[in-house]
Length: 149
Image (cartoon, rainbow, N blue to C red; front, side):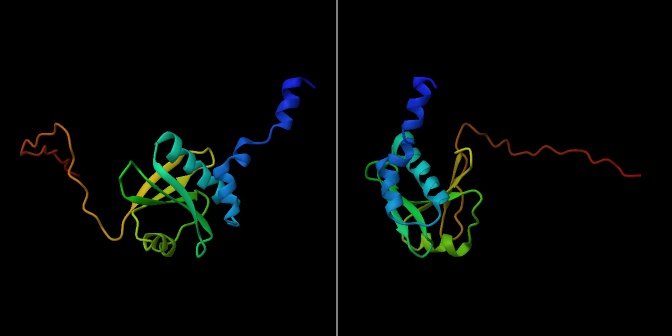
């Protein structure tokens, strides 16, 4: 056995010894896949997206790890609900997270670590108008319909 492969066997998985992962494990959430998903989202928010004050909290009712943080300094706190893609989500669980009083992001975590964020709101929200150098020409293009025989 080579020295490099021997060292690889001795070195623990860095995720398992990371302080944030240890803190999430200490919350005693039963679903280890959800804890792993929460850690991946934590790393994305804190290291890649540079969110401020990212922390983890347990939702005893849902038995999940939720993340809280600020997108930038001085921004409002947001709750992030990390969810492995194989785990179902219900309206009741989304309602429970929304009832915490903070804006909510649902983050779907795929098995290949792909993260997809979706902003969730309490009720319907009118979308913002498109921005950019668009011009309304005031006319529509009409297509001719084929006559059916």
